[in-house]
Length: 266
Image 1: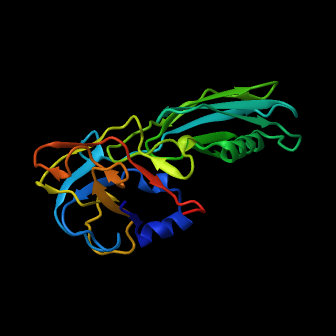
Image 2: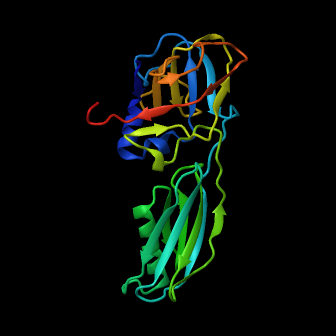
């Protein structure tokens, strides 16, 4: 079984900046022939055979979806707001979050801050901030992941309808499954997405890299990269069906792909 390597830059980003899903969103996967570089920091070697994107289309960027609503009446102690977050893409389970109004939250802004805090403490899908005199702005945690939001208030506490600020844009780079599906440290490709590409040179696939679309492949310890071997067996880090020899002009589809964060037993 071959190994998956991460670059120095990716290791640092995981320690300080964000999750693996967040960091790899909108990346591409390239398959190469030839000798395998000793590390993901090293320059690419061999020949690039194919670049994998969503649907095999030209790379395009994703945008986070953003919506907002206003707290129009702060209500009274004991009133509540129920927020239901429905994942649209990738699909998943609803998140239902409740904010309970306290005596201290006696202005619309304080209520908005309390709602945002409740969302941030309990949601794997979205994040929220409060601003102005009582506006709650909610955005997807991950670029390209869309959601719908329903907000219901009780008692005299009142909220406005949810308004779309920025529509979700799911670009043609790579996307991974919802955080709701991650078990035992395994992050999988988005099941509903088709990862594919057209082979540009004939050769025998030996290794792959996941990297930013504008990474030129040179030696660079600051770049965010994953590198692994390619094979036809199920225990290969990247499995391709049939033969590992790719022919120019044909299409390659990646049916399944996952990355496992090592647990304490290795």
